[in-house]
Structures are given as structure tokens and as C-alpha cells.
Image 1 (cartoon, rainbow, N blue to C red):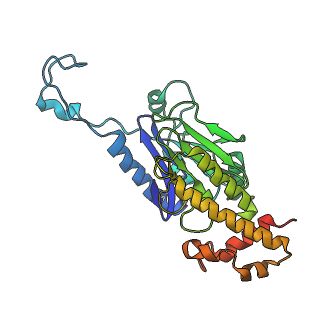
Image 2 (cartoon, rainbow, N blue to C red; image 1 turned 45 degrees about the vertical axis):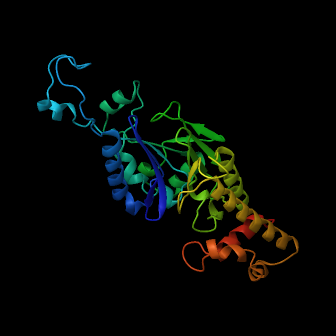
Image 3 (spheres, rainbow, N blue to C red; image 1 turned 180 degrees about the horizontal axis):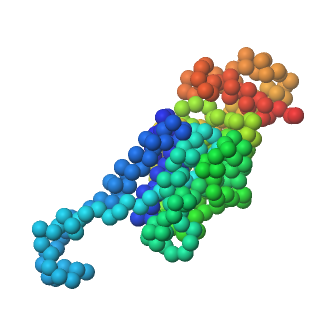
Length: 317
């Protein structure tokens, strides 16, 4: 997990290369690239000490000695960025695509990872995966094709065709949540889920009505995370959840957040059923007992803005 100007992205680094889940805001791209390079050097290209000297070293025809350990132990080449996954079209999720994607390589010819890296062409870049609604939103907002997803899916889920860095990686579309193109990303071997903007530990969930978001979609997404996650003991530990913003969490944290969002939805729905106006609902303060933890009176996403979005997504047209 990398914290990029307050927004969380995920990085998988290993012998198959690098996968980045979300690229963060555009102005942070250089720092994200520097962090990926540092992780690659530390994890994927760390030299191991030689454990043998002499003519009997396995796999070596000839003599070895401490004098040439520096040659034997030199780091392997760092594998480049191969995949980017955008969990939504929001600038905090996909803003760095334009600068970061061209630094990678995804050779679409035959052969394995090693041959792919060896046959790099100037026109190649990392594969950028997203739901097709995310592509439509990004391409409508940006005239630069280098910022667009290159590979999309339209069904309920998508998975890489083979293991990447020793594990299966799956993406699940959550319709009408933060937007209409949200995905959560499940690293099945590591037991890590990147929740994107469906789950923040720092505030009420961000609902982008103009891009197809809704309160029910947020709840559905949180429930999908809870379906996938497994606790280590007594609802604690186990599967780790990377939120779009905030601290690392487990499924107990997600369940508490889901319960809070559901309670607020039901309160506002009941108030709408009684014929209360939006202003009357705000005066009744349906979020009062949660405002100390998640509320805000200023900033990019205030409590009033959250209530507006919930009311709009529940009200009949």
C-alpha cells in the first residue's frame, strides 16, 4: 500500500513484474514512479549472498572464489511495470495514467515474461485494465489516449489469465457505487483487497451522482468485500482491505462501516417516506451519532454533500 497525497494505491512487485492498482493524482506521478523503482530494487532485484566457492558449485562450470562474488551477486534486472488497474475514473484513481502507463511494458506477442521484456518496442506501455464504463468516462474527460484503459471488461468480474507474482488477481465490478464503473481488486494469494473509492476510513462514502453512483451501490460493494474477505480470528485480521483513503483495515472495520452506511440509508429512506423535504431531513440530522467519526463541515466531501447524495439516490424521479 502506497499513500499518494492522501489516496491509497497498491503495488505488487515480483519476478513477473509490477502491477499498480490505481495511479493516484496526476501531480504525484513522479513520486509514484520513484516509489515503484525503489520497491523493485529492494524486492525483485535484491542480490543474494553466494554460498559456494570452488569447482563443485552447482550450476557453475569452472572456478569460483570470493574475488568474483561481486559479479555473481550483482542484482538481476528490475522487471518493469506490466499492469495498471483503475478502480474508477476519478482523478485520484486514474490521474497518473498518462505519465505512468508509458513507463511500463506489456508485449502482446507470444512468449513468457522474460521474452516480453526483452522485445520492448517504443510504442508499448503497461496494460491498463478497467471496467468499460471507466474507459468511457476517462476517454470523455481526456483527449490523451495514453491516459485511457487499454483492456476492459463488461461482466460482473474479470481475472488475469494466469498467476502474476505467484497469485491469482481478480477484479469485481460494483455497479452504481461511487460511480457506474467501480472495481474492487482481490489479490487472492496475499489476501488483500483494494476497495477503491467504495470504502474510505476517513469520511462518509463518496457518491458521484453524475457518474452513476448511489448509496445502494456503495452498500452492495461493501457487502461484496465482506463476502470475499475472511477473518483470522473473531472478525479480526485475516484479509486486509486497502481503502481509497485512510488506514489499512480488516473485515471487522468494513462491517462496521457497512452497518453505519446502511443505518443512515434506512433513516433517510424512512424520512422520505414520511414526506420530509431535503432541508427537513438535514435539520433532523440523520448522521448525528456518526458525525464525530466520519462527518465534515468543510473540504471535498462534507456531511451535507453526503446527505444530498443519499437523498438524491433514494428519491423517486
